[in-house]
Image (cartoon, rainbow, N blue to C red; front, side, top):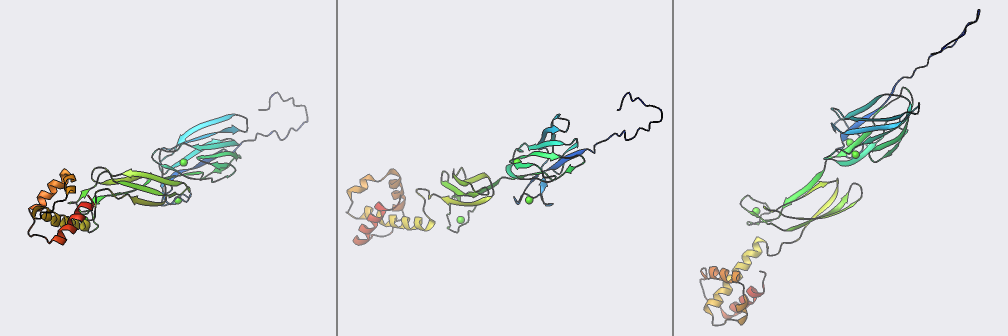
Amino acid sequence: MFASITLLAGVDGQDNNFGELIPASLAGYVYEDANNDGIFQITETGIVGATVTLTGTDDLGQAVNVNTTTVAGGGYAFDNLRPGTYTINESQPSGYLDGKDTQGTPGTGTAGNDVFASIALAAGVDGQDNNFGELIPASLAGYVYEDANNDGIFQITETGIVGATVTLTGTDDLGQAVSVNGTTVAGGGYAFDNLRPGTYTINESQPSGIWTARTRRARRARARRATTCLRRSPWRPASMARTTTSANSSRRAWQATCTRTPTTTECSRSLRRALSGPR
Ligand SMILES: [Ca+2]
Ligand SMILES: [Ca+2]
Ligand SMILES: [Ca+2]
C-alpha cells in the first residue's frame, strides 16, 4: 500500500511496485536405511508417523516453530515458508536404532545427529531430500543343547540346556565395542537382540557336567567295569565311601548290566578312572 499520495498536475508517477515472494519449502524423508549407507534407495522403505520439527526465524524476524509427521512413503514437508534461517529436527522413531542423516538441498545447514541446523533458505527454494535414515534392530540367537546322537543337529527329540552362559563380543558400525553375556532359558535358547550392524563373535562357556555323546558313552563303559570290580572283587577302597548319592544310584543301575568278572589289573585301572573322571 502506498497511502496519501499527493499527485500534482503533469506528474507521471512511476515504479510504484508491489514485490511478492514465491513461497519456499523444506522437505525430506524418514526411512529404513536397510544397507546403512545414508541413501534412501528405491528398494528401501519409508517410515510413517515419525515426528519432524521446523524451528527458526524468517526474514521478518518472526519465530517459526512447526511440527509435522511423515506420511505414507516416509515423506515430510514444510511448505509456504518465507525466506529465513531454519532448523529441521527429527524425533527418533521408536522401534528403530539411530541411523545416518543426510542433508539434501539447499544444503546450507549443518548436519548433526537427527538435525540439520541453521539452513539459510531463500524465497522460492524448495529444499528436498533432507533425510533421516533409521536402522531396524538386528539379532543373533541359537541354542545350547544335549546332542544325544552327536550329529550337530538339534532334533526335536533332544533337550535344551538351561542356564548355559553365552557371550557376544564385537564391534558395531559406529566402531563401538560390544560385549554382552547371555544365559540360555527354558528350551536352551539364547538371543542377543537390538543389535546394530557390525561384526560379532558368539562364545559358549562349556556348561559344567556336560560332555559330548562319545565322552558320555566312554564314561559309562568305564563306570560299568568299575562297578563290577566293586561288586565282585574283595578290593574296596575307603574312598568309595565318599561317593555321592547320585553316583550310588547310578552304580545300582550299572550293576544290573554287569556280565563278567574283570581282571585285577582292569579292575584297579577302571576304579581309578571312575573315581577321578568327570562327574
Ligand atoms: Ca540405503
Ligand atoms: Ca534418527
Ligand atoms: Ca542331534
